Image 1 (cartoon, rainbow, N blue to C red):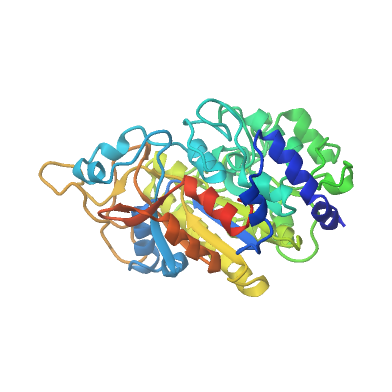
Image 2: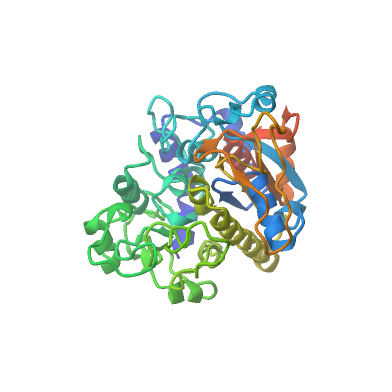
Length: 460
């Protein structure tokens, strides 16, 4: 019922929303809308903070050799530049060890670039360098009658999921962002941490923290099912089909991986900032030496839930999946936990691959696996010293043993990061990868992700 209404009003919504964004469809764009889309579904997976060496370290720890992750066998592989307002110089990047530390992007600017196709300043969510509102691909796709969703292993109002839905001058305005996502957007699935009643170990807190869920009034209304929302399905009436169903318990997530689903779902696992990375214990220990939180789902489970909701839409969907705490482990220079988080993300990639195999096909679904920037400037040992080569490789110490690796920063870098893609529409990447790095080869810019998706889903 909900999807039929959404589809029926797609043309009207497109006109209204495009005009509201201050732009008009050109004649060529209107003509293009009569053509058959290349992709029905698009899934973008973002390992926040990864680079080539984060993958290599995880490969070595898991399997004792490189090239072992599922996405490393994908047919389309290239690099991606991640700078915000500025540029990337391939020559300077390999002539100077410190060049990549210069004015690195942040997750908000990077997510905005991938979601809108426009560069912006650091900390900006869905607005350009002048503060003007930008249009997300999710807004385009909702107007075209498709379902959309964002999920993350960190707070759902954090930079990357917010950067695909909301509009705000600062990523730090978490309550404002959460309220926009929950009350004003047409997003169908929102899942992420930030539960106000639990700490990073998944224990109940005496004093709740409502910062990441829009404040106490929003949260209480969400729990009670009385939260005022916009007309998300576009049928001209705000009714029960527009309202959120909230889940929090691990068992609820596990149960919703299959079977009947609500029309709109918000999931907030019972943990504060991240599913696992921020838990207590020795934060510099080897992977899994500290027991995991046992009351929260993993990213693969969350991914399955989102897919089970979104694939109800016969017109297709867009889903952004973020492994958000690879970045957090990089900032904290945690070797063990960065591998834990990357392994969790890799399992989610496998879950998506299984969903495509069982419920769709690569002719109608495009999967892009990439990051938003590198964090921690991870290299092999003794990099960046006068007596040694400027960059050394991660050292393989065998499966189950931490590889030889070294952090050179507690911040982001402007490194070229890897991008992997699968699906018939992935062939479009070839026309975008028209820049070259002497080490990483052909690469695209992060703004071209939005351009590619609009082309693949025929909304240019």
